[in-house]
Picture 1 (spheres, rainbow over the protein chains, first blue to last red):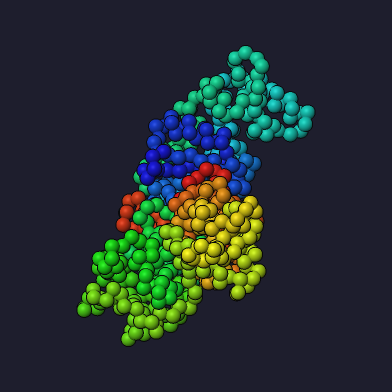
Picture 2 (cartoon, rainbow over the protein chains, first blue to last red; picture 1 turned 120 degrees about the vertical axis):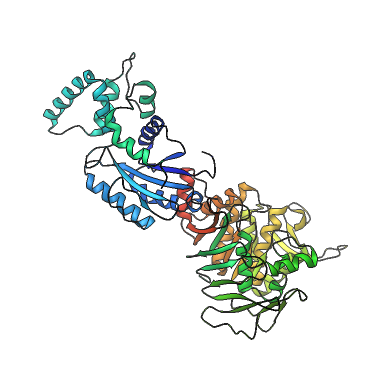
Length: 212
Length: 331
């Protein structure tokens, strides 16, 4: 990133989310966007504090800041938590997700909760939905496996567990098949970044590159 | 804290900058020409004694005799020649007024008092190089100032010689600090004039033969020794240090800070220091693990879209530590 050039900043919950966001930004041809991970929702406030006190923020280099996190099991709680953190650090109350509010004359802020508005899950959930469209045969196995486990343990697989199993099931190359990290998935598996299930995310990411 | 906030309005290149929540240690950082030195100069005007204010034009800046001396007093205001400005803190404030006779009058009072328009503390006109009214120049807080240039070794030595009569324990403390932070071989220091020498100097016993004059022991030793002498001998309320990392090896900065934090807390001194060094900022943060003192970074930034505007940001070592972890540059 060239020093001093006006740019946008996307904050993601972890490095996995960061990789997905970077791929989507590349797909929409977004330039001058910085993506940083805050490594767990408990660190969001300290990350916002760091951003607020950064030279880039003081100099007015960040034109837009998009704060993202996963909904996990409770979308409303996740949204409330992000909204409170943004208000505590930047003194601005966001009305809704994907609505930009001005922190000052230079910088706007918005929030987004993965996998999408009022949905539970995480960024991996969104990726799985996209993968389901392109590899339905893999999901025949995966769904049966999940149903079998549900009947045995009376509990659903967690989004992360489902995603981990998918990374194994979706591999077409030779054994041994191992669980893949997001980096390896993006390198080794085919992903349809133009899938319409990413459209909501693409729309908000497109918004960060437009001028305030 | 002695000073809780500092506000600079129309002072030098700063339109309006305010630093709130100041700490025991205040590291002033920022890019080139953003006003770091101006912050120290403002503090000097707020708290300097007669001699410190009189010599201010040449303390932190290069100056070419009369020309720059005059330029300094003329250009203190934001818009150049004879502009009005205001510097304020919770203890003292300074205001500059300009009159038709091309005179700049600086008034200094306690924060809650009105200026006495009849008695400026400094009256500058072309002919007088900034005349200072000695009666008005008494400060409410005692200030020590260390510019970038290394002070005369005789001054350092004389200061060292004043420490023991004030409090013999402080001389021992100083030796222990230097031993822990700069020179592990150091056993003791003595103010001495050996046979054949012309002047008294501080000599160091390194346990390996005759004592060595401190001037032969490297810049870091001399720098640290002078800072500690200034604190222990002069017992200031506020210490100003320009480019504090000067002469210090980056690997030893953390130990240097650990020693300085201990002294500042022990002697109840508030520090304002400028630095360009990322290592210095990081070392201060690491040395303060466990919250031994209140450490603040005061950063000046020029707005990208409006380079005339400089903004001030204050953040603490917790923010600095988070930035270090994520690899963000905070200078």
